[in-house]
Amino acid sequence: MEMILVVSSILLWVMVLLNMLWTLGLARRVRSVHPVMDSLKIGQRAPAFSAPSLQSSLMTLADYAERVAAFVFVSPHCEPCRNELPHLRELSSKVREYGVELVLVSDEGEETTRPFVDGTMDGLTVLVAPRSHNRFFSDYKVPGTPSFYLLDAQGKVQATGIGVSELSEKIEALPRVMKGGD
Image 1 (spheres, rainbow, N blue to C red):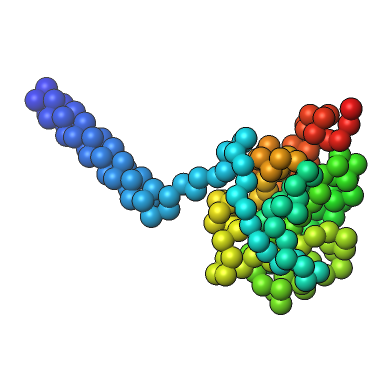
Image 2: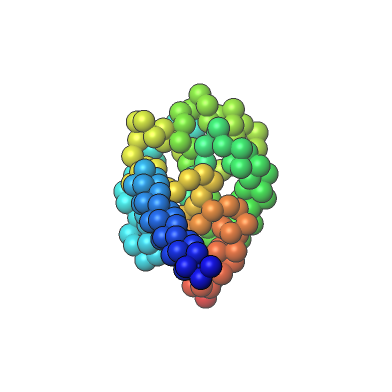
């Protein structure tokens, strides 16, 4: 009887070890198929970009020099992005009080982006940067939509995250000097 207990214990431990090895192998395979996206780091200078706005002007990072800007990356096909639009509209008037310019960056062309924002984002700069034609999303290492980068007046990343509520918190936490105060 004791021999059966010893053998069954050994078999159990062998199964546990095999299960652990199998799990580690699966994790490695998933990581290689879906690598973790690296995002821009706090304090890092934002990469230069060039993208047309819905107002038909070509915008670059230099257009935001000496201004604090929050770039919110969206996709017209993204349901969470659609749900965030009303909150973005509310936030756009609030951030002006902090001296922050809110800029929407769409990963689709004008024909898809215009109906997505039409009537809801009046007065807000909307850039169109289709991933197939523009490197904006890849250069900024955008992890997904909706997400954001908050840049200071020198073009350095001050905050990054996902969602309008997190962006609002980051803007409210900005140093007073950065907000255009004393």
